[in-house]
Length: 287
Image (cartoon, rainbow, N blue to C red; front, side):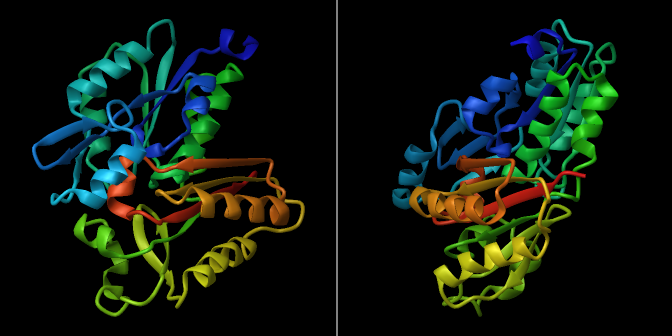
């Protein structure tokens, strides 16, 4: 707790970061929930609905879920709370290409001119974003000032690849987040595509016939980017596929010996767009 006592900067993100709760609590990260909508029901992501409950609803409900960014007021309240006793707040948020969250945060910050708030477009989501948030949180724990903490996250923008396999493209397509992978729709009924998020956009990387081969391809793609001796931080994320995620974690641990390996379940907002059965790996090499 010595590091916590010297903290000068609060770190804030939104719930799409999918950071496991123990890490959120360990680093005192402030999380602003996204809004989840299904039919006439509305929930705050990660607050009043958990992933298992949501994924059961996803399978059985006639309504396809939608998500909405936090309001300006929600960010104003979150910034004000986070800034208490601090010199400033660093907010690392979901890609502006994927959500209007950044705009809500920017408006809220402009309404709070007396607070020192640094807002960063991660150009990422899920644990691709989460790894950046954790880097900022560690810099804050080390006593970093506003610039140092912000730079810890900003220096990783564009440097945290994420590759993922979806069980079907249906959810990305219906949720409007499919990006350049749209060209696979209609031709990929029997395929398990490997996708990436680059600069906040979903792009296809490979078209694979079977799920196991697609998961193997994930590891091959990572291997192409890591050299022996690299200090690598990794996160495996999944949507209602814990057993497969555990196997991928074991494979990555044996092959790459990462200095950090996080297993995370995607929250309902990310799960809405990726769909059950999704497995992904985000990673970065220390500079």
